[in-house]
Image (cartoon, rainbow, N blue to C red; front, side, top):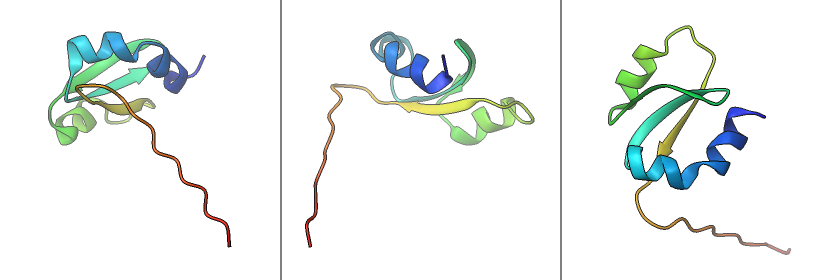
Length: 68
């Protein structure tokens, strides 16, 4: 399972603990988090990981199809 898949499957849990923060995940492990992207990047320097901003509130998706 990729980190992105893990994030999607655990987003509600992440929202409860890390709302409005950047979270760095490697596999299924949170390796850093914080309100500042630059601080999370500094903590994960030279580590291959996925960094996601965890939004507070309900998620929504917006999709538009353009036909020409």
